[in-house]
Length: 137
Image (cartoon, rainbow, N blue to C red; front, side, top):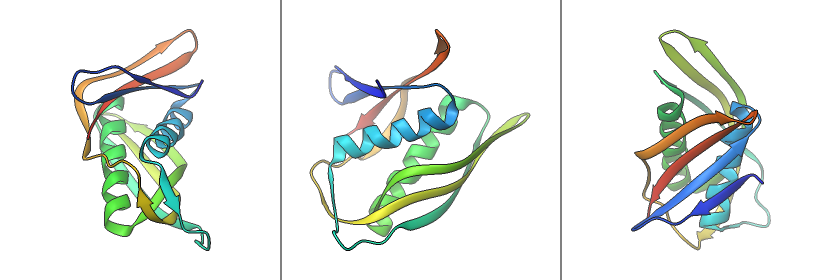
């Protein structure tokens, strides 16, 4: 299982699983895609977007990353579905850098305003990572 939508009073909470940080990030992008349901243009060519985000801890880094991805989605009208890159631990900072891969889209079934820090969780349990975040719709 890559992710699961959880009940939340006003918004949606998503729990994402992964064997490593990169898998968690890509499964988070997949969760956004399956929630927003973009209609990708049939003749769309792959687009690559450079991205760099840094923070002092992993859950905040991931939330900031997802919010930056949402910003790119709305500003560029491109739905990003995959991240290729690395996470570098340079105390006191953690840096995520690389490229997003995506495609132009025609419409979205649902929109997300933001990924929030509220109730954000990142833990390692039974040799896999769990990342929980709430999306504001």
